[in-house]
Length: 497
Image 1 (cartoon, rainbow, N blue to C red):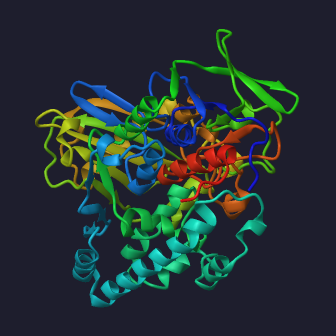
Image 2 (image 1 turned 45 degrees about the vertical axis):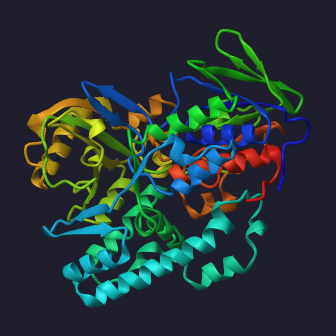
């Protein structure tokens, strides 16, 4: 594994999102002097929070999985997860709500989950579920050490028995076909393939290896951090600060000070310069900041989304913590989203109501809802549409989404809204996210594993390391936390785990 040459005693990390915080904790645990520079007024990055009138709205990720990765990161500075963060395991990880009026509660307990599937689709599908969950666990085992939890510099790094085992299991076929080999019920096929959108590709174009995303949020379980997802970066930042990491909030990086092939300092707006032996950049478009850095090929970006975050004065009885509300259409709407550059005509929505688990997030008699509606990004080369004026369209699209929710069982929602926050592809673009998507580069085959930008690129300064969604291993809370460790190891060298 390539590492940063020369001295690395003083490190500046650009960005206090989950990737930057994970990097800072690892580096501080290895004895480096670390300063984190963040243009916002606190930690979190994409994991933003809006608090208003007693409602706490998470404006970023809404699903939290793999807490062991955060625990391992905190352990780098001698901290225990349970001392920093209270996690509640969700007995029902998802409620799948289908267009025919049926629904299925996805349980963390396999026996309870199988019983639900048997009641919905019969004993043969319940038996298929058990086989599929075992397959997911094995796929995850094969991929974690080989593709995900390591720095990759060339495709040759993948050569080994795990690669051949993954190929034999059909990991490089289509995800939709892989799922269909196990299940005959169309509803179950959808349940185990919609996660491909998290990786930025349609289930009909994603490789079967991305089935492992379902292992994280269905096979391995989902947790809720008390206080909301925003409590996670706050816990990590608190542990880092107590360990001696310096934080500079409200500070924007203007440029990196390059001398030869090394960056020697980070220059802030206003003229201040922070000396550095190495720099970790976690921004979504590092080529805008890192001199000489460029990607090997033009990137393909994931679809974007419109999010509505609502505080409602209503009990909304019977709601699950997370609901996947499927529309009747399926392949057609993925074509609309990723090929035609228009919003889904019959959308499948992720609706989270964390206040049913955590009453600290809403006042008495109220609930918090987060609604994620997939939308095209702004890059026409990625199937997006830069011509949509989301500022003008948002009021009408908001009414459409709320109408869909009302029709699907969230009766009385629209008239009970007290607090509201919305984001669109234009919002994400204004925050510096490429193509107006919070999901970064799509996990196409050519942007996966060793073909995705490494944490230590060969183009650019020798002492600038990258972390975050746009580099290895990829998108999502678990992946960006892993990227923080991978980035740190480019500076400290491999750490035995």
